[in-house]
Length: 257
Image 1 (cartoon, rainbow, N blue to C red):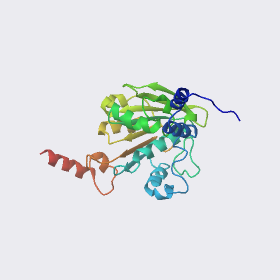
Image 2 (cartoon, rainbow, N blue to C red; image 1 turned 45 degrees about the horizontal axis):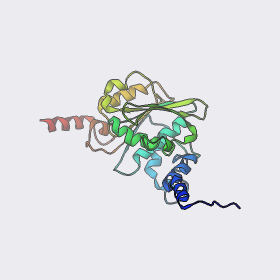
Image 3 (cartoon, rainbow, N blue to C red; image 1 turned 90 degrees about the vertical axis):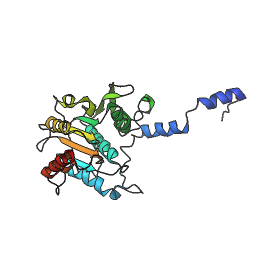
Image 4 (spheres, rainbow, N blue to C red; image 1 turned 90 degrees about the horizontal axis):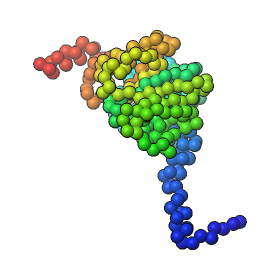
């Protein structure tokens, strides 16, 4: 067995060159496939049977084109949206999956309210910390299927992610923001759109149009994950059986009077 015979200054230099414990943990997680392959486990304190509403949301994807995960803060809505988006884009569905399946590569938009929040929340959740390429793969997308990324509109932002689908072709996940306006959501067909945080009505209408002719049951997927910070809006009410849209419209007019 060989031993290093280093002087004090050489030893100090060597020790300082070693990666931190945090960097080692991140690299280990990255090589193991990121969070996607470990989330919602069979057993343990975070076993999926404890997340009944999350599982129901995923299950409804098999039969429902539009879904809203209406939630409180800090209950994993963004994580849930990222998980389903990656499952479809990669085709790496877990054995327990009961939701919709795409057998071929598919194209997605994921959208937040501004370019900054989209980068700081959605890009972080899917890829890892913005501006730190060595940590790409510590988000929801496993590093072994991460093929390519393109630059976004602002510093350290990604525009589009290309990932390998199990079919062998490439799926795309493109970042959007509501502050780009309705026109930026026009023109192209998408298999799925994930909206994180409530969007303007006109943006949601475009999302429905973009997914109208993709998919097997009358269109592609539109899923929303947000806390209703704006109250009982028309969009929220449209997902609730006990509140008519006409009632919401009347309440809005009354508030404006």
